[in-house]
Length: 138
Image (tube, rainbow, N blue to C red; front, top):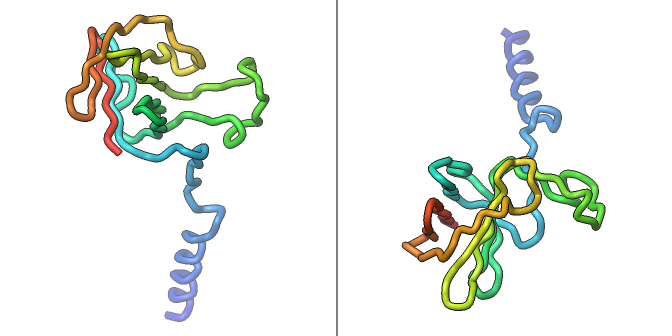
C-alpha cells in the first residue's frame, strides 16, 4: 500500500515537473492568440488557432499556430535575409477606400507570393475577395 502511494505521488509529481510541461509558445509584443481562417484559391491554409496583431486603422496580420518569430524562436538577425517562416500567414490592410491583402504561398516563404487579391470586402469577421477569405475571431 505504501509502495503504491509513493509510486502514485511520484507519477503525479513527475507530470508537473518542468521537463514534462508542455512548452508555451511565446508571441512577440502586441500579438495575441485567436482563431483564424485563411482560404486561398480553395486551399485552406489556416483554420483554427492562430496568432494575430491588429494595428491602428484596422490593418492586421495573422500567423498559423506553428509560426516562429525572430528574437523568440530564433536569433533576431535584424535583416530580412535571416527571417524564417514555419507556417502560413496573411496581411490585410486598408488601401484607400477598400481593403487589400496578401499572404505567403508556401510555409517557408517570408514574403508574399505576389498574388493580387484585388479589393476585399468585409463580412463580419471576414475579408473576402476573388478566391480568398481571411477571417479573424479574437
